[in-house]
Image 1 (cartoon, rainbow, N blue to C red):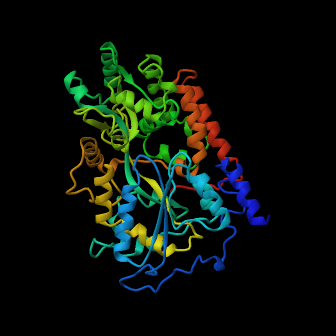
Image 2: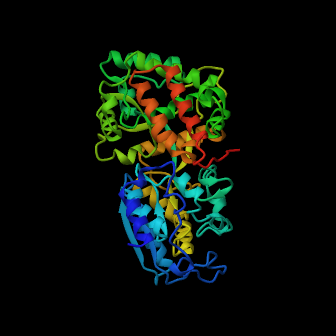
Image 3: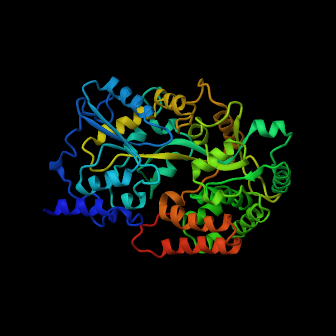
Length: 470
């Protein structure tokens, strides 16, 4: 057994489960050199072929098999082969991106395009710190496929590049544009003559009405309780301003214990104390909690704008789900009620050791065309990072409310990126603290203390590369 075999088997056997380290130390891009064909498929660059795609070079695309399915990717692949008919595309989908692909990164034989998504994604901190990803800057400066006179970068929504950049290098294409907020059934609120509460006091008053009517005001994904960190942090940012998110992203001391975070945690603790949460929610996963909500067992749920597509098979006719921003704590909030969290999501990457890097970048240019983006929205009912691509597309009710919320939010939109920089912090440490907090086992002070200790552990871990958001 040679060194490469040992590395492959060791990685596959269990060392993959160390997300903070990302890939096997020192071996993320190992096993590959010029002889493995990495640069074999570079063609001649020209005005018609700005990325230098070799027309007959094969392309391998691996998609995360999740709520969006595979059909959108197959459509993008078909668009690619329309322009490069001599190219063959190998398509595959998996729910286990890390287990499936990490050994190939170790071997230096990764695919050309990877949709690195889902619970089993490969940790980006490890990928970036070990230079395992191709720089996508050339893609941004290439002309758009179907928006005349504009570069790709000029067709993207604000923040699309920032969320995939590390120390100024654009390495990850987050393709969808996701809005995070509080979801409800328009039908339920209309039939009961209930108005969504725009202030926290109004929200609590409405929760009391809902509970009195025999319906739980809230449910959440107890198996993935970080979903509830999203409205809590949003409340803090609207109260204290965008610097609240900046401090958390940059692992600043006591960022999780700021006055804004304390005020927000105290507010959200009320829905726990007053038993406004559907009984049994701590034991539900995201699909189970969303289904209970769709069945009318609870009025509100925290989620991103993929919710409608994910629930389409179980949502009753006429339910008419809609998204709203988190309520304002009061007149002292730095951001208005309409301010909502919006960010690029659903990450795609081209491995640095891919054989057909140019083809991978060109595939992304296809995805970022108006045609590619509109087709995606039609198929999966989700927005993309391509500005204006939803125009002329008939949107389902929920997604139409997302567009309205973005329009109303305008320049007041906000986001945080600590979950991209340090996946372990959100998926493990904050997740665990949310589980304790929203199940009622700990109070606000203990919750923030656990989050801060988690952030401090990341800050003090010299094996984890740190990034600064400015």
